[in-house]
Length: 99
Image (cartoon, rainbow, N blue to C red; front, side, top):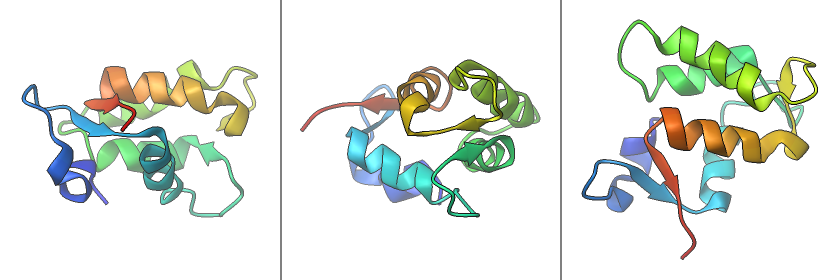
């Protein structure tokens, strides 16, 4: 489920994975293990783990929830998805493009 293997054809010269918003949503929803339509910290941690090398991936998962979870309920829902996109572009080597 790693981004680079899934979206290998869309890797830019700077190494960032380029995908549109729909592709990103489809990819991140793969980690919604309980299928509630929201991403919790464990699910985001798994997404980060599959795409970020090193010991700090747990910290990035926690940071992602804190940064994206605007209402502080511990989940990222559809209304907070843009915050998650920002996090992914800053921390996961993703660039959201329109094509």
